Image: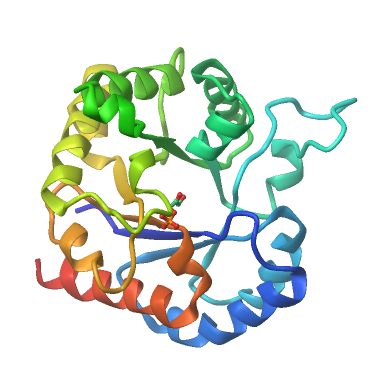
Length: 254
Ligand code: 13P
């Protein structure tokens, strides 16, 4: 049994004050929901404040990115060492990082290695563009990205993978549950080829892309989907709570 995991990727939203307000609006209720791992990923500058606010609650903290070097002359970057002890998770290889900041599979691989070496748990994002999807390249793209992310890594430890088709991110056009499950099965097969049956069965794979409290049930009801990486809806306390509540209910009965 894989514990479902719902993570909120706040992206470049919320000031420190707003981040604190958002946490306060959902902390108590989130804390009471059992059977789902709940992760908040605020901007770097709010990690410390959010960490204080969720202390003692069953809510985990994640960063949205990091650099792979330990320290040094890399103006503006944040190292794994700076994050370790502050948060448990780190989102790596998000399509916005790949697209706007030129992160290649090799860079993602260096980041995954650095995160694992520092005791951080990566949430590795993969997913095809609309053009790739329409050209029938979804399987080859996600397979290449998974292979690339884990190149030369002996064990992915607790790494989580998020399948986020780029055409579904922030567009309001989510994949269907069946579509997402089919691609996630392909991703699980890639993990099987890299690490064998036990790890492929244990690794958690989320769906991401226009997930909200009105459509989460469709994804969570699928056998290979172990949770969601939520963007826009994670900035609304009621919506995020609804997503986590339904996940707990559906995975408990399913
Ligand atoms: P939206 O939920 O806003 O589509 O964003 C998804 C995403 O990119 C999460 O990482």
